[in-house]
Length: 283
Image 1: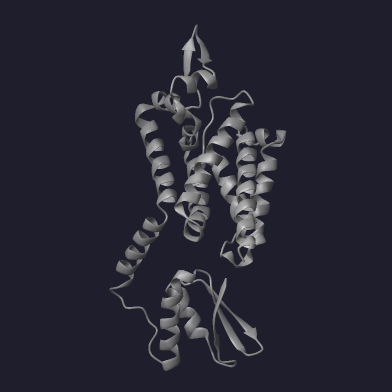
Image 2: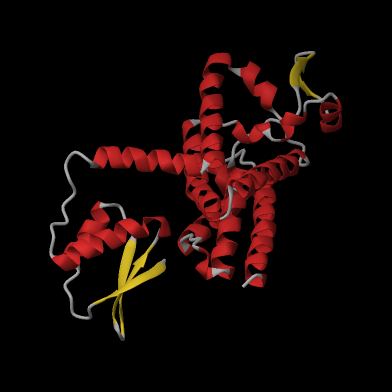
């Protein structure tokens, strides 16, 4: 949250708050010694907020025009996508791969696994990572991140990619987001491969890297604009621990790429510490 302006101490702000929520402007109002302090969640909406406050002060109507919201919403959505190209591309590629698997099936899956997989003598056979890289199939280091084996798996991962990715691209840069995708994706995939598993996939390792990165930025540099609910951190870490237990398999959550989660989490902690330390040093 970012402080914007002081409002009169005893003013009735109920209509203003309703108008702000109708315009999808995240905010809160706190009582301070000098009056009521208005805070905003997204600084990019400050101009719109200020315009609404001025209309409220003049007593002008605060209703939204009937014919404009859809156009404004479409413009806002397009603007958001333009400002977070890496996050948007991650989601689009994941959705496209998921759709294409329904058409090409196993042929596409084995083209994206970390090492080539085939059948030899009626049994599953696969190459080594060194052979794969020496043959020029370098994309396999990252491609398993875009493999998802079910709707719930896909939706859960992409939801958090969108939530955390927008913050990183909006408050740092697309280059930082791309670096996190590549380093966390490759790091998580290699961590999982080293356990002897070759048939795995998903963006979960990257998600845990984004979670750790955003959490450290929000904790160490509170004014950076990064935010993640503490209960979400507890839930995500609790879920990671739960899937490592035998109980997870007994209730249908076996076969989880736990090492990929840990690998991604470690990458996010390192990058979060590095970038937050730079912010603190430059103050």
